[in-house]
Image 1 (cartoon, rainbow, N blue to C red):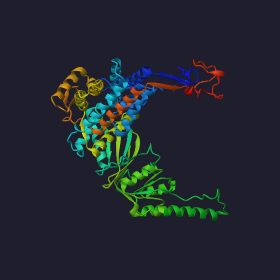
Image 2 (image 1 turned 120 degrees about the horizontal axis):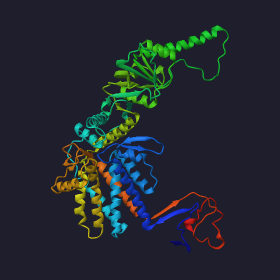
Image 3 (image 1 turned 135 degrees about the vertical axis):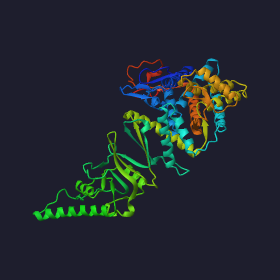
Length: 562
């Protein structure tokens, strides 16, 4: 390539540009994308077993979740980073299908590589992939099931499908039940407020020990909130509790305009002590007269006042986080007051139970039982903190897919059934094209079958036999035939409750195709590198005088326009 009579440098070795053009650039991008997909596929199989990942910092992580694996992979090549972005967007927007998106993109790149070897131009491949994607997205809406998305059993099936292979059957069913209950509890029919769902994890136990709480669980260890455990005469459980929420320090007010107070004689000290005592008594009586059983304060509570509250049988919790104060207001219907002087019986919240619990060495405060509560919590359990973190990630995915199913309603059969039906449709659709785009559409159909093929491999079955049986079933019109993850056999997955939201499939297919086409269109890679301009070694002509363009230092900003 030349510009202005000068030959473009192939490489500037010091502080310049590394450039790869044409077929080599495209081949490098395709290879990087395929490598990421192949690594993810190999890491997940066979049989959905957990994998031990060891990072460069020595941290060991056990997981079989594709999104978790991608988050911990060190990805350097720009093409592979693009596929990672596809997976990230998939997880953020629809909560599931991250592995599907990456595997599909990798299969599309693999199919394109084979077409390049046959002499098909990249532009024809991307055009064929575009036609295939448009056709697949149109066909998806015709494959939706008639299940009622507001039915709890259907929502449990959606959540259960999202975590297939992550836990044993009883544990997965338990978590799916909790996710469906949580979403239904915060839904008003047209909207789901996920901010009203709190996830708290306590190491010890198993995922099957998780609990649904119709209120708020405050982890006193993780939160800044503290309660006086020395008040042993306080009950651990308050029934039909009335709760005060105060956003102000409780105790004697301190002077803030001066650093010291000067008094003359003991009468001055007695007056100060009497003033502080009067403030403490007034605050105590204000809280008690309102009928308070528990007071949550966003700031500090004076030790003397807290002790007196305890003697009155009132639980005092100080330094409660602001977000927890808002959640308590939603859970109890109480009003957050700016000072104790504003506290009235009408401002108090209500709860069926306020209890202090100790679970696996963790101190928890549970506020629940208000029939009008607008806050729910899931108390997650796991053997270790890492297990809790993995459980939290998977529960969040469950909440997202259940929300999609509840709000939008359209469900598709899982287990690779949808991909197999789309592949069969695309092969017929390809016959409508006379040119080489037909080959690209057929390659896209083959890429879609990567999903059922991988499911069969993970179940320990022969992918060739399973795919042959699956094709035969769909040729007979069995649209809901898919791969049973338990044994790799072909079965009616819809009847077995394996269903997924339409939005998950739509996003995965569209995102994977867009990423693959973007990489296939790139035929020129220019990489800027830091370095020292002195001692450079490059193979271009400086021209008359060898001027580098006004004495610029620290690299070659002139190189692109040479």
